[in-house]
Length: 543
Image (cartoon, rainbow, N blue to C red; front, side, top):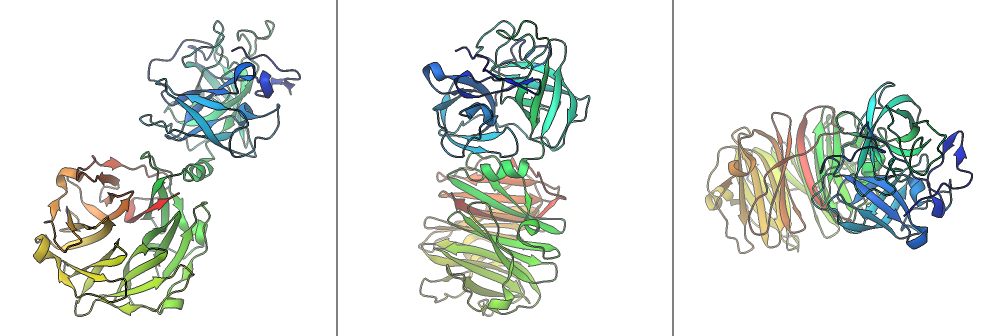
């Protein structure tokens, strides 16, 4: 439907976008202009067409998928009147996104920025199978050519159904915006508002906000200017990731030691990852962290960190993305000497922690009320303990210890009694010396994932609830030939997820489904890490 120019649309010489039934929407394009040629099929699959309102009140915009659930676009597309604030929550008008493959999804939720014309819109039905756009990490310099894309008017089409693109040159930038001008006759027109502005690598640097619309169909025939203003996005990764991590459903929280600190990222249900954030910057500094563990309790992620000085600290990343300050565990659960490793798992709302110190293993519990019980020695006669893993199965704590390079297993029953340590190698076959161990409980099964022979081999085994074991299976056919620095496993929505940091600086992730098939490993992005990833721990959360 046609979108007419609103009254009082002139603002500082620029045409305002959005605003009621007569919303003015803009876009961008190369000499195949936004008001120019169509893009090649599939070239801009993440760009979506937005329809806000119904019947006579309809308005059109453009947006960009960041992942399967979230579209980034201009807040002005949803404003009740030009320049008015857009409230968070369900859109006031029915709003629909049409995907590049023709599917449609209603917009269920808006998360606006307060400092710029920008909003994240959550799709009620995730856009499975379409890869989201990558965020640029730097502001483009003046003189840089960028590509804009949108579904707005061209010079000859009123309401095109395919993406058009155009080339725009950066004139200047400030704290929140980019000023650009079209090359040749390229121009941003009504309907292109909210569309992406992309650098040469195809990464998103801005969102189209308003323009002069010189030469656009239905515009002022005397207007020839192709200048436009776009909203910067290169400095908003943390905000964008924070909103994305609020997506309802299962998530995997990953903790990675890198350099002298600890970083957390979220793997969302669609398999996409947020960037990593520095945990010390959020939860107070510990002057360096060398290892960690994490356990999910509902939507919260509990984090245990071993400082470079050998202390043990605890904090919580809450479901809303806020962090508590690190608390000293030794001050409330007794101190341990020569702490080398920690593992954690939730049982109900309690967090069970197993720490390896002085070649022995100790256990403590943090209750749902926040109280800690004193550490208790649990390794018994096992000597030279070097690593531990934990899992929850049917409300019981399963613990795996590595002693002398060999795996052992015990269970803390719901009444607090411990069973004796069993030799896993006798039940599940022998491997080379184990250097890293992780466990996860899924249904009635306890999964063991280990790295052996200085990380050059990786294996998986499981213990059924009746005490029967599978043999250790070589994961080479799953992970390929890698040298693991650290392995971690978690049960997420009833399936086993395994993550591995490798000696060549990668973080690999795979899933073992309930039918016992494995996904091909995916290399996770390491955005936000200052150095190669080291020790790793993952856990499940449900939002």
